[in-house]
Amino acid sequence: MSGWNGLRGAGILLVIVTVAGLIGGWDDAALESLIPALRQTNAYYDPFRLWISVGILGLFLIWAGWYLHRHHGPERPLPVVWSPILFWSCIAVSPVFLLSHHGLLPDLLFAEDGPMEYLTVLLLVVSAAFAGLAARHPTLPKPDRILLWVFVGGMLFLALEEISWGQRIFGIETPEALKESNVQGEINLHNLTVGWNEVVRMILACILSAVLLLLPRDAVPGLRGRFMALKPDGRYLPLIPILLASHLYDEWFEQVVSFAIVSYAWLIYRRSNSTQSTLV
Image (cartoon, rainbow, N blue to C red; front, side):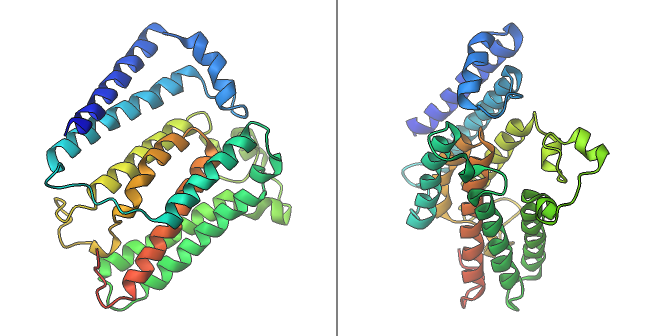
């Protein structure tokens, strides 16, 4: 129980630090010198957006501490299940990315159209395939099938976004209007928001982490008996700290999420082929 209170205390501390940083410009000079060391390729990441990200993380920790204190404890432990393949896949990519990001490995690894980018694309396409196969299973409830087809479309959209809709493959020139507003001069949407990407990723990381904390429970208000076949399970809970840490780096976050997504899609596919389509 005291661990959950510790989460809330850490969250409150982060919120206080955020307010001090935003109101008083506290330690902006130190942050200005720290950011290039953390993000050599993203000079657009400034102290203001860093404070916003820290504040969002603080609010998430306050909520997580409250939720876990209220719903879990010695009598209801978190259903953590270690999935070695998923966990070590996400862990393994972390030092590889960090070494490459700081120039200790060839830049080719995480470059545009490099091996890691196409690995992300491959994982997204495979995830879409698993979800599509699961969605076709006749025993799956209709709401679950609809959500899975939406999931398939979303994965294919992200895969195409990652390769700029085949622009470099087919040698397509970027329209002038898009070239001016896209930070990399490419045909895609996700680079239109550069400058706030880190904040958006922190919000996504917190939402995903909240979902992982909420859905392993048997009774979630409004979801009892619905979409049970789509629930993640305890194997994803150890991903939460990796998700929260990796949001600061574009490619690292993409890799961690893509490994988690393909594992989740495989889980749903296996459930759809089991005798109990709502296996949890």
